[in-house]
Length: 215
Image (cartoon, rainbow, N blue to C red; front, side):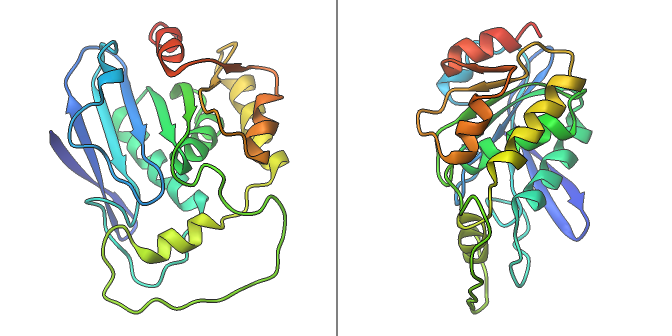
């Protein structure tokens, strides 16, 4: 495994290349509290391009900032930095990474050639609408996975209509008939809204990779 450090403001993001290959990269986005696996998972064996994994801010070998304040949009920006380095890629996200994969597919539809949403830690996320505020404190020093990230991102708001908006942006601008594939079995409200949108495929991970390999 080789690793490059990418700069996101004051954060150093670890982007790992798990396997070499020819063609478009496969970018893996991990779940909450996880990090990029040390080797390419067996299910990537059919992918001919390089297989890479990004450690989100506060996770793995990426910087753990002081003070928390995480949001899914923070991780969306992490993924955007990784895409700027890789160029066009197919994205597979687990849990929280699935939500980020959805958002980056809508935010960068010309670069994301298919996003696959899979089960994993914090797929559900927080509430689907506004709730009462609560406060917490975590004493330093902080280490990965950042406990601030575990708290903030486990209760991050995920409105269904907001999630559906990213599907529509991906469908309008990617040129793909089905730019989002849902392989997850668990269906929190935001993901139910995604599945109900035109242009969303429900299938296995293997089927999704076979489809996007030629997209």
